[in-house]
Image (cartoon, rainbow, N blue to C red):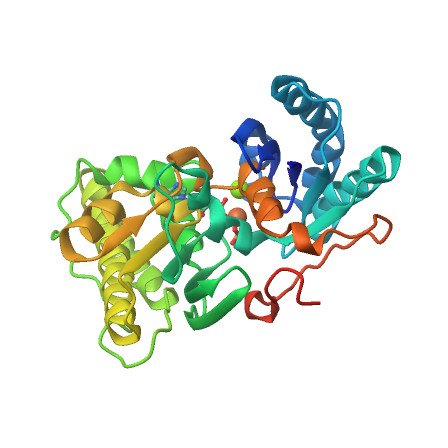
Length: 337
Ligand code: ATP
Ligand code: MG
Ligand code: FE
């Protein structure tokens, strides 16, 4: 069975073809980063319009690269995300499925992130603990199987990726800041500035990053007043990254121990962070699984593979689903509804 996957929840247009026998056959991505960079963040209207321009050519490209004329099913991101952007993917997925007379499968974007490691040769077996760290989410999820999710902890304010992006902005780095901040941090001393490890020593598995952001802001102001910001930028970046990584790793290991998970999956854009990967490898005694770097951030391949896992949910096309909010723990196993 071949599943076409379509992703348009935010500022990346993604398409891919996944074959249940042969694996990933083709994938392609168009990032809108340049379009939004001048505004310092994603502009929803611009995002929707660009998805309209890019999506059909991308779909044509992946079908041609996969060597097929039409797939057996079309999976698309139905939420959560920007409604206008989601409608583009949902509308095209339903339209194509109607024309091809194949079913559609609506996919939860964070389930896509969570299942992205299934695209790798060394895929994790169930059960596992997932740390989902992206631009809009920070969650620890107990995963018993597809659609069997227990959210153990979540962020009370900013997401980890959002904290990276906002801190990068404070340091004068271009949008999107996460990867740029990580590059700057390489040259800095992670112990240079004492920053809080928010909620690390509290019971429970929730996160909070807004206090850390304020602490960084104060450090930046102080450096500005002292006229030392230029020399201190790398140190501030490294200290911030260390505080986030320390918190994420500490809380993940504790949750894994408490809940008895031997396997941990890290997914979402912040999962591309090399310091996070390094620290987990060093400190966690169980196995850690990641998607390849390019599949940490948004892409069509993770939606295609999630669709392949949810073939039992395939339905006749027609209703254009697009949900700004959608709880991950409201999902059911494939075929359950
Ligand atoms: P969500 O999945 O929650 O809807 P999103 O789709 O916008 O949000 P992703 O595409 O998964 O998020 O990830 C983007 C985020 O990852 C951005 O905040 C970006 O700064 C961050 N990011 C990407 N690479 C790195 C890195 N190497 N280090 C830290 N953060 C990173
Ligand atoms: Mg993005
Ligand atoms: Fe995402």
